Image (cartoon, rainbow, N blue to C red):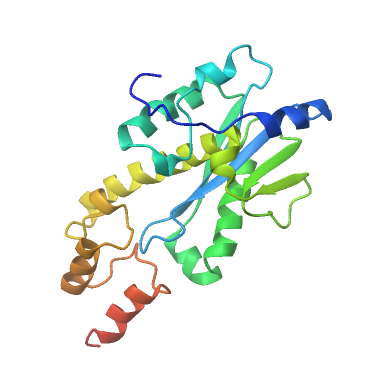
Length: 218
């Protein structure tokens, strides 16, 4: 894949072990935006065609989305969507994050992503977490986005989907710099909050936003 960083990549080792145990539709799951002050929390789910010859070569540039540039992630997302058996992105709104907290909102977004898959997986590989309230077999993998190709692919779809949404949100709520920082905590975001107050997409339960709301005149 042109332009992608040539550093060690996640492998299909865990997926191959599950294949040998009889699993055929293995979905990787990861989230994006959990720590952001504004916007939704997103989760990607990807089922890769594990028996496709040369799959690892086709996805040679795939890695943890945080190790990639925006252009690299965009290129990779297109490749992932083109080869995946099934893929989906689920999300939880800022209001849902406020109401149930970031951990439960992550679970909610992941369940929505799994529900959005056009093929029902027979095993889930999840970055860090176990997903409650779901009967599918699952494995939580610490640093899964760096170790499992399926989880890394899911991290890229979650990140690119959310970044595109936050860029569009910048036009709707100008002055905060959403297109630049994607809702995460930066000095520019803090300046925007101080000048403009919170917009409807801000997570009011997060301390930096809550402090601005508490200091604003009633």
